[in-house]
Image 1 (cartoon, rainbow, N blue to C red):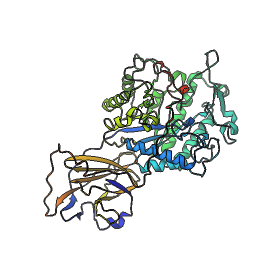
Image 2: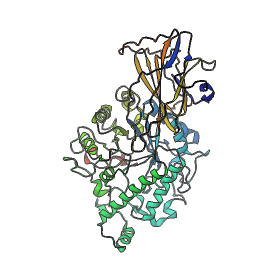
Image 3: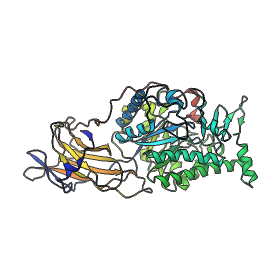
Image 4: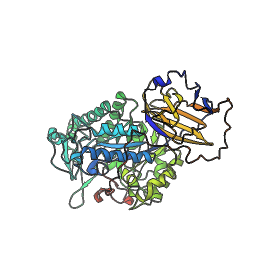
Length: 565
């Protein structure tokens, strides 16, 4: 089966009063409206981080031409679609820079090798990524680092438009990095302004942040921890009559930012999801037996509070440890985070797919996904990062498709944002044309709201199959020339609500329904062959770069950070 970009279906469907209208497909069969119910859609978040900092995932190196950057990104998204992922977490602001056209911050050095220099020929990577992701039925969540100002591995000099030049009073040097001071009210207002600018101007599906609020502790030459240099903002707070301890005051700054971010995004576009991926351990001893870094104390991140308060639509705690770890137990932490979900938001734990080939066999990732699928408290995972999936490292992609990702999945419904399903579409058989000799079906939205995708389901020889198509698709053809016994389409909105299906069943020309084969019958492999959408470009070979730099990882057993995006 292949898909075509939405044609102008008004003329084609004008003669159809509704999907129930009868249309002759051949001399032997007709399709009529049916009450047969297709299977309930499979629901699961299947996301992957795409890190741009230090060119970890994309682009493969700075200085590529616009065409090369675009082809790499198309290849990445093609592979994500092939593996039946449904969301991309795309890093657009690694360190007060931009992988999009921004009036506030300079172009990222990871694009051209020079901070402030636009791609040549000019294009907007974020707009391109959104368009290409949506054409493949993938959500795109814009990933921001709210307070990191400069990464320690740099490509060149700082642009005159960088925050360290325009607002040096907000910037703190800490270890090898530059950071914005979260305790400065001007900093929080500025970072919110940057994020909301993207929400307003781009058709993103989500806003995403990871574990970097206050930075991980830096050490001096003798190995002693160094305190974050936020003296000016702390003294200002105390001079205004502040009574909190310095640690509690720092946590309050992050709390306020997270709360304001959620409210601000919803005030602009209620359907845009807000997700946070904190360090996977809130505090040692939670649950009993867990050891490692105390993110509440050392990062001033009260992630359990944000979760309890509902200041996010999904939580993706970085559970980057194996199932059999004792001090950082994946199943124990998965269960604990699920128990903290007082507002009934979505839990999508982050898993360390990048460890395949070093610390993990692919079976570890498959088993973790299987555990999440059976948990009853989590509704999918986010893969750190997409590189291992791009490389199909040790066959992980093939094994995902052969087991836990065998069937397509819609993202879960975000019912607290919107619980009203869209109107059911109009559907009609599509007669073969000279330019498209294969028969198929066309459909048209009756919904008054923008759609995310279409769920197409069809039964052939007793077996149901499902495909998720972009909202930009309005028809499909069956290349074998044989149409299914039953064909169904559901409209899916931006919050994941699916319409009541519009279902057509095939009948004999004489009006007698075709008998339904037993459910155990297998579909012919050649009868229905899904094909790529005509809007998709061929996938180039994925880049073969290391999964991560050695200095960005530390021991899983230590409970310390395992990545530095």
